[in-house]
Amino acid sequence: FTDGSCREVDLAPYLRGPIFEPIKSDPALFSSMQVEEGTIAWPNGADIDPDVLYSSGRLRPHVQ
Image (cartoon, rainbow, N blue to C red):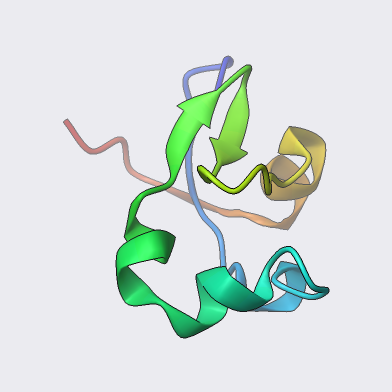
């Protein structure tokens, strides 16, 4: 995150709705996520609000 923290987030509660169905059912598509404009996003246009990720994440040591 922009504050330098590293957080572990369970994405399962956020992968709901038609845009996320292909992501849930296709491990290759799930793995294709990238960081775009400060959040995680997938090639099909799905993304998750970075504030949601930050607030729901569990702080963990920074991984290099």
